Length: 108
Image (cartoon, rainbow, N blue to C red; front, top):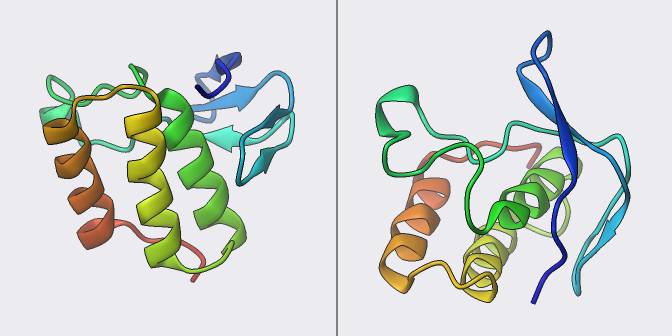
């Protein structure tokens, strides 16, 4: 199981700020890191809200994209792996994985 995320929302940035550093098996997240949570357009937030089960998967994915850690395919597969570690249903995790695989943009 992955650790819980403790973050504050900054309205002026439209982003969350990580309160404490977090360690996952693959990536360390520094305190002060910014994330928008699950990046979903407003019209899909009924299905994937910005903050919900598996939120740490979004943080790890954002860190990979921000720092160009490893490769985009690796980051996207890690996103799916972390969703499943957090017990997100397999069908929903697959849809979310395909969304980042097809539409995700990072520093790669």
